[in-house]
Image (cartoon, rainbow, N blue to C red; front, side, top):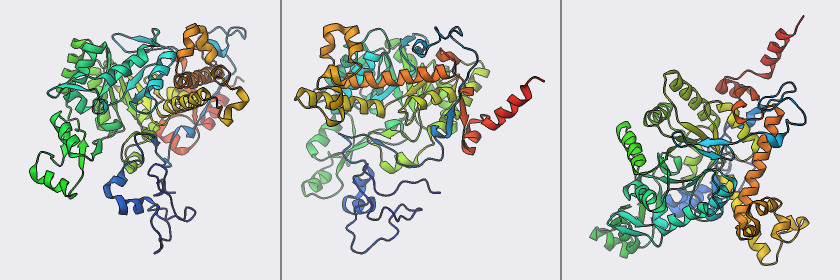
Length: 519
């Protein structure tokens, strides 16, 4: 059975003329007719060329892979138990799901407590204020995404090094406004951000103490790119140190541009060319500057590179490595690359777990690891924690958390206009009536709760649902602290899940149970 997505998708604002009759190998319509004006991806490519590589409306949308991967967390079921209790006394009056402890610590040398084993990964667009504020309300780490500098209208540079970045400062403040001792805001830097000295500026001027180095654009092994229609902007970006092609300072290029000829200008992100010495040195330098937690962000590269990243992280004392598996989303990566590069989060997590265990056997202290790649619900998160236990202790929830921020924001805006979205009329017509968890924020913030953005309430409420669901699944397994979650809490349902995870099937466990029955 083919796993590829058809060549028509909302991601590229295209569709198939004959969606019920597709050529499975290519993704094209089975009958490509002479009178078709090309609503599909090939048609768009015929009209727009290389522009068709990228998602549609990347500045106002977010996207996820449509590929039907052969393995995901739906290939596992969650186990359950009747006897015993871990973490709380086996007393029905005491062992209740709200008392399950899901608190975690982020960082090794300078751990900061978190309310849950959840991280909100890098974002820097859409409802970012609400995304960062919501993370602070809950008390989990959240990451400011790459390349914010190029989007900052108030950016001040000394040559090619940042002096003032008001947009980054505003993003940090969005979290700090609701910080209450849990979690932290992490600033991510790609190769261009490093060139411009972003982390040095943020540590010295903004008090940022958690930073993240990124291995490629959008955790993908590719260069980010964006069109620059005006030569004036292309010249400014080049002057400030960004890579711009073709060279806007070339007189022949300028003349061709004025005539409407030749390629459009593109601001192209530099590919990081790390090695062990430079990475270890950079981590050391960031700590000398004042960073308390240094993190890596990477994707499903070849296993040899993943093993090397984890080994170097252990050598350098890196606090956290986030591994982003295929099947999640993208902000601006090429659509087909999003579908076709890398392996699913399940495969990546199983491989990383084995690598981390190997480091431990060799006497190394491995970094904390978070797994990312399409997590949206509490059952997926629980399976992710169980599959990676005990080496992998965090799950990154990005696209879904941003969706919650955007929904909360839009609903709040409607309520402010005196309108209630039809879907929520049954709950009331005020913020307090529509947002059920607003009462929890009122208890903590009192009258100040009225100033909390509705998008942040949306993130808080969504994460509250996830946390409550995780606690329920822990209680189902009679485990009332995160440290007790283990691989025995999940069951592989398919042959591929058995092969990749190495977990016993329900039938094999049945055989073991029969052997253990007393005579």
